[in-house]
Image 1 (cartoon, one colour):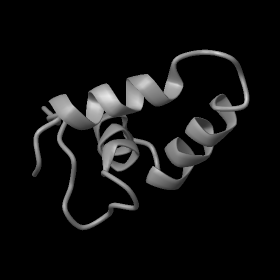
Image 2: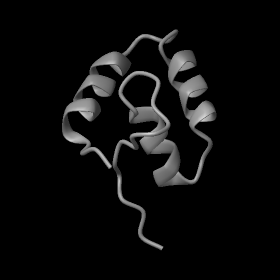
Image 3: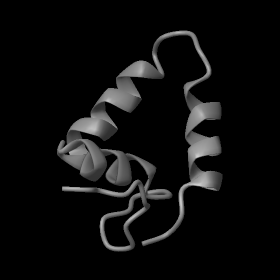
Image 4: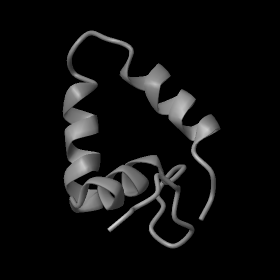
Length: 60
């Protein structure tokens, strides 16, 4: 089973990055979104990583 890392067109809120990561790793997109929001409470480059993934992940 080879799942590609892509941004799906149907399950997007902002750019589809969390949904694509969820599909790739077999998680719910809601869980990935929640983890991302919680990680934003910690110091670090989370938003920058999200923007980079938005630019490099292809559309489905």
